[in-house]
Length: 379
Image 1 (tube, rainbow, N blue to C red):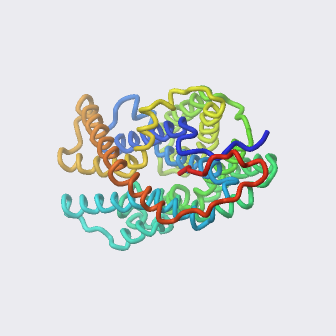
Image 2 (tube, rainbow, N blue to C red):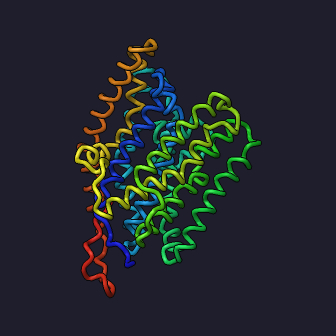
Image 3 (cartoon, one colour):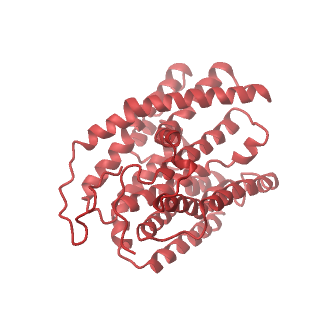
């Protein structure tokens, strides 16, 4: 089967819709642990930090899908990624620091702020650094590393046979297991940083996304359908409930790190199934107008929601269990989503568009058989 043409921004709309649900998983995780629990819901999302793993896999898929065969110069690619994430990162760090300093009268480490703005904060094992600036922004340090190594990964993997991609995926899965067991002897705090934050460790999830994206680009069909892949992801998070009840998070074999390390194959299957449905022209509930809009807002929501939680808890305190917690949750969800929409339309999207316009990719001469391809416009 010939390669699929390079995609436009929402060429795979179901993936945009999935971004909202992954962000919601992270938001509900923070609400459960920082505000109070809601019976049933909190049990299911107690390890919703796995949504970050989803984003790491998705990043690899989308970048491989977009740039394989596109002939985009490395400097142009890196500038586009900078334009994509850095403006809103800077705004969110400013808002986070202002809340700590002005509202809560807490000192903020300038070193942490500088490391965050330089996208290197997750390389430091000290929580005051990798959680400084804006705690939710730690994952952008990992993304920055992924962007740096992506051109090399693409050069190494793009021209390989599907068998190589399959073995790479298997190696990534085995590597995650080996890391989980191999680092079990480290002190709890060091182990948590090495498994959950360190870009080198998280690179395994990105690589899995890259080979998945390359396979999709060459016409690969995932072995499970979209409904089945959704069911597997839900079942995995529900299976973590009895595991969590039996083993405290401080123990290395608890589901805390496992929920992030071992969920990558399930998320890769989900992303592949959703993308395949779009490519086959099958409509999904993930590709509707509002799903796409909320997916566009998901990056801003991810960066801003914890700031809203912090302010709400400071102003009103933690709510009483029961109905008050549910109302508190609803208020945070509505307000943080409103700020996310505002940030997307006023900061993220216009800043990205303006910055991308400063570096124009040289026109690529079409190769044989490519005359009908549309220009590369993906994010």
